[in-house]
Each structure stands twice: as structure tokens, then as C-alpha cells.
Amino acid sequence: MLTPRLLLLGFLGLCVPATYASYTAPSLAGTRKLLLVGDSLSVGPFGREMQTFLCDLAGEGRVYVVASCGSSPEHWLEGEPAFVSKCGSRVKTPSTFKHHEFEKGRPPEPFTTPKIAPLLERIRPATVVVQLGTNWFDLLEAHPGPEEIARLGGILERFADTVQNAPGRPALVWITPPDSSRFRKVQDSVTKLLLSTGKRRRFTVIDSSSMVRYEAGQSGGDGVHYFGADAVKWADGVKKRLRPLL
Figure 1: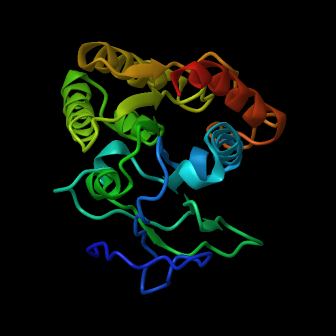
Figure 2: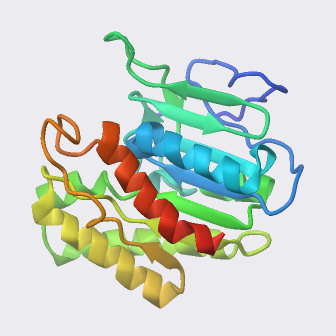
Figure 3: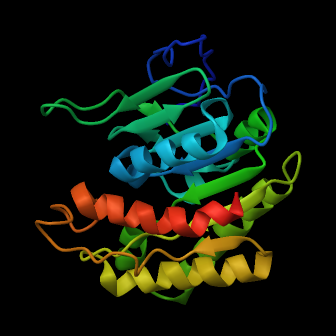
């Protein structure tokens, strides 16, 4: 696994490619900055909707979005191995935007998931919105039981510590995964873990698990990723809960 390299983002430029693309947090211009981090759901249509919403709400110059397909909370923590996504990324800063997904069967440019602590140090957002946890479904399906839940709970504690003790002590808002027809047997465990951790650590959890129901062929094709009208419906539900928090 490669060590992440921070590469300079030029004004109105794109992420500078190396062996793997990676992310450098930009300058500290502006106030009341907002940071959204997420996984493949934020790389895709949901992330597009949220990016537009946040920019309309706070202004283009105050919104940062970093989404890494396949990532889980632990991948954003220092001390954990670097996670290189090979299925897509979305990076938006006040002056740059870069989006990679599969296109005509061609894989996207690999992307090294940044660590959250350096992002917070550089950006100093007032609020951090997190959309992560979807990729824990596979873990719980493969390793069900209280031991794995306890391990994931420890990761959430570390993530909350990192955000809540960052410069400026930003507010933390966590969006739970939406309904997944493929992982309904384990999804409730992730939702409950996020809700209980949020209550204990005093951060807001937006439970989106019942905002929209995944219907194969309508919502998407794999039981997890949302496209079309259902992606917009999910995003609209989150926006309604998120707006008064920002």
C-alpha cells in the first residue's frame, strides 16, 4: 500500500496526477467553511446533489467535497494504511473540481483517500458532514457478531475524536447509509451503531435509512448505489434535515 502524497492544486487546475492521484487541502480563504466527505454514494448522483445544495447554501468559495469510492471511516484516520480507491472520486474545492468514475468501461484514475486530520487542519471547516458506513455492510456480512460491532464502534470513536478536537472544534453531522436491498440483514446494525455513538459523543446523526426504499431496476442495479429519481429523493430528504444545522 502506498503512502499518500500531498500534491498541490493550482488555481482553477485539476489534481496533479502522479502514480496515484491524491488530494491537497487548499488555502484557508473564506469563513464558515463546510466539508463533506463520503464514499461511492457521494462520488455519484447523491454527491452531485449535495455539492450543488451546499454551494447554493454557503457559496462556492466555502464548500469542500472529498469522496473516495470504497472507503470506510477507518481509511480516513491517521495511523491506518493508505486506501487507494480504484472505483472513483469526487474532489471539490473553492477553485477546483475533479470527478472520476468508470466511463465506457474504462476504470477511473486511482485515488489515495486523504486522512481527515490534515484536511481539518488546513480547511478549518465550521461543519463536517460525513457520509460513510456503506462499506461496512460487507464486513458485517462476513463477520457478524458483537466483536466486529465493537471494533467498528472504536473506529467511530476515533473519527469523532479527530473531528471534534480539530482546530475550531467543528460540528460533526453524520448521514447514515440509505436503504440497501442487498444488505438489509446487516444495515440496521450500522445505523444503530451510528445513532448510539452520535448520542454518546453529542454529534448529529441524520438517519436516512427510511428516506427512500431501494427498488431493483428503479433505484439502481446493484442493491446499493442510487441513480435517477431515487438518488434525488434521498438527497432531498437529507437536505431537509441538514439545512437547519448549517
